[in-house]
Image (cartoon, rainbow, N blue to C red; front, side):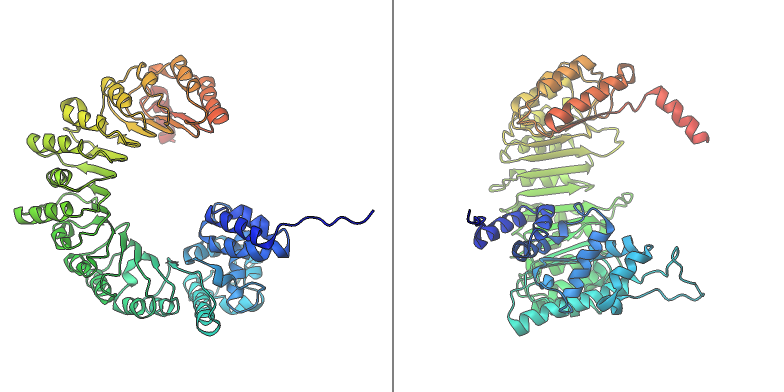
Length: 556
């Protein structure tokens, strides 16, 4: 019998498969594809290294991560079969820091990582006292210097590929956690395809970094900083924004503590026509008071404004003119789809004007930790909410420990408006007092809800029947509950295994006198896990038995 030729998939079909796996960010599947054969590896590795930023949840051990990063750095020296550097879309130096952290005390793994051509990349911390390196206590790594050497090699190689060989380079995102102000402009100047920069510390930015972007990165559009603190940050960031090409920045996010100031906000007007996403978290009260300086930025699609968690100082109180400018500014952002106010002193008067503004059609609205306004303003704001019929996500949360917290029974106009939001998918009223009657009404009016969270006083067992929504995948109840096992069993058994797939049920305030047995809790969790790939948790915050045990543990 003649040897039969095994059928093989054409190369272009395998390429399409690998590209689809890359689009789905299937890191593990691509990793295994790369190990099958050299023919498939040539296609899989490009997609694999293109989604390296998502590798951490899939990496099984420290050695695997070390091998990945070692191969990338080696490729920057031209010492690998494939040019892995050319495939990277996101150069995540924070991930490299994590890798170095994992191998810092494992001398065998450290020796493997830095052996051969990577020996010049090894840097150890200098110390004023003699420390003898041992197998159990190797000398500490100088992560900042190692990252600088690695990034220098990678960015220089990428620039060489683009300049000398005309090779298409995939890298568009740079993420760095340890970077020196004098080093960043050099790296940027080598990355002509850069569109996004993500920094742990935004204080390293300034005019030089912006000029490097303006000169070498024509498609740059996005800046994300975790924190941005320092004595000169307000001016340095203002210089950065002004030195960029005008109307080039499309996204700015500052996620944590910062010292942005009046000059910083004023400088953003140089990107008024391009800026679409502006997320400013943890702003100083004095900076909140300067929000009117953003009035030219009317192309916004997503706006987040949060005041720092410090005690109210009065520095963020708007004058009448400033209030008018801020309300008029946000109301003129006709493309606005997401609005998030957090810890603002007086957001409701502003929100009332925004919700009533012609052309404003929000899809996401979050108003959290706000102070109460007058009854007239409050009622007018909640009535205006009902006009936003495109809303898909709504979160309303009054200030913690507020004596006049949001009680829906006192604001029937709010319940009326919520019930008119027929496209609502996610409703979060965790920091509100919601009654059983209001939950029944809301759940009946909004059958498309997928996420429902609410607080309040004691709710009755009968609401479980109304909470069995056809698309529900998250139910969090912070109100006081006294659900029986029979009621809960009936509730979970009547969930749809298809449309309620993956549902998570969290009861955060079950009355201790209605405490379930361990067996009953286990049955509920197992049922959801086995039949809907879901989860069930229940807490008894006022359980005297648990409080008694805590007393003993504290005394120990």
